[in-house]
Image 1 (cartoon, one colour):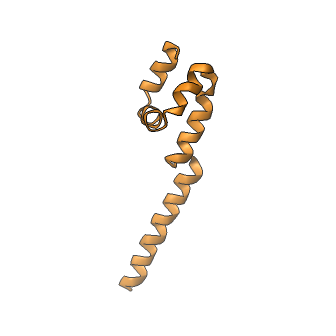
Image 2 (image 1 turned 180 degrees about the vertical axis):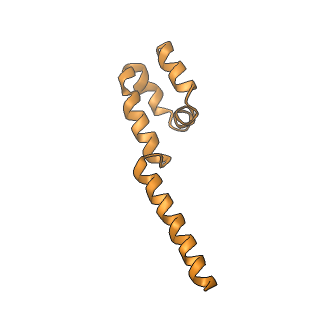
Length: 73
C-alpha cells in the first residue's frame, strides 16, 4: 500500500478500525488505491455515519423524549 494512503487511513480512526475488522480491504487497496472511496462508503454505511443515519438517530431520540413526556402527563 502506498505511503500517503497509509497516512490517510491512520489519521482517520474509523477507517483504521474498519480496515482492521475487514482485512480483505488490504488486498483491494494494494491493487488499486482508488478503492479507498469505496471502503469509506462501506465504512460509513456499517458504522451509520451517513447524514440520513444521523437524522434517523435524532428522530428516534425525539420520539423517545416525546414518549416520556406523554407518560409524565
